[in-house]
Length: 192
Image 1 (cartoon, helix red, strand yellow):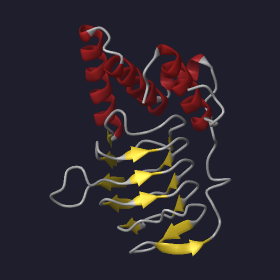
Image 2 (tube, one colour):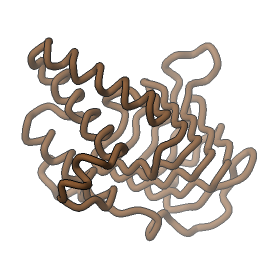
Image 3 (tube, rainbow, N blue to C red):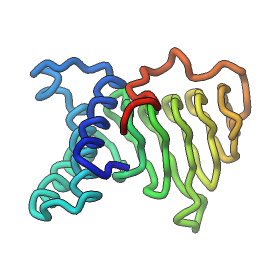
């Protein structure tokens, strides 16, 4: 969670690296996914650090509008540094979800709670790859370095990490980790 301006800058840089975006004006002004992620981090900073209410309201409005345009329903303070949203398309994440650093997220992903329990949401470790169409729900724990295959339905925990899971319902299909499926913009030795 962003708690200072320095952390805000570090989160932005980790996200930029994970998204593989250059520091060009073209990427800054015309890349809508990168714009959405910058707005998300700015809103997290303004909210967590109790900054100017008027600016926060404006940034929240822009964040919601970009979310609607791109099909994203992602609450603030759910993803760690190094988030990479692959491209626009429907993504729904419950606010009780907590995801570690360097997560790569694809289109048509739904991460939610167990029916009738607003806080029973997934806890996802660092360096996780979440493929297109993945559905995750309930009070589950996904270990670090896990790759989740396309259209998997994950309704139980896989805390060991360093695996690939897929299927309906999801099961371990390989001991191959998420290595090579994502760019790590955040490294634990970084000062965040």
